Length: 169
Image (cartoon, rainbow, N blue to C red; front, side):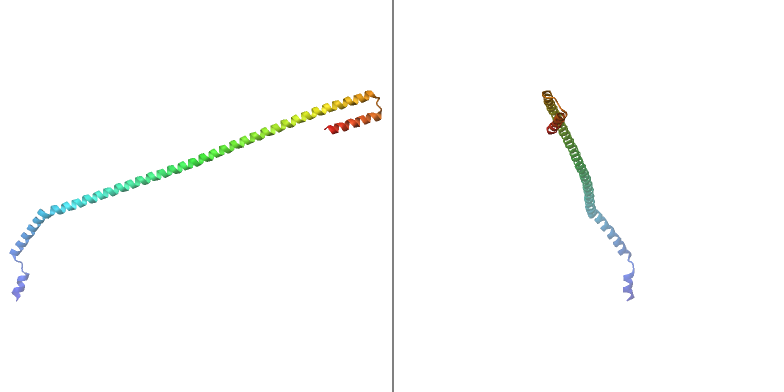
């Protein structure tokens, strides 16, 4: 029985040479018929992966560009909005100042007109008073001429003159 076990463990040179030849034939056949196809599939996958990576990079670059453009547009819109608000505030302030100036001018004109009217009325009153005083003086003079004035008459005439001047004013 030991001969049976011995044949299992021993190395047979013919079997070894056949196994090596079989290996070389399999490698040659694999290289000849399958390796080109496998390499072609691997190259196609590599190219597809490269294209996907390139497309992803391009999409990322486009997204970054769009984001940058969006941020610039938002900044411009914000700047324009601030400019519009500032312009509106300046316009409102200028209009307010203009209206206040016009109101002050109108108030000054009304005040000046009132002062002129008061001065005119004062002159008119003074002229009327002068005319009335002149008339009273003429009346007194005619009364003095008509009669000789005694001191009691003189006082009565002065009192009457004062009373007429008080009534006139």
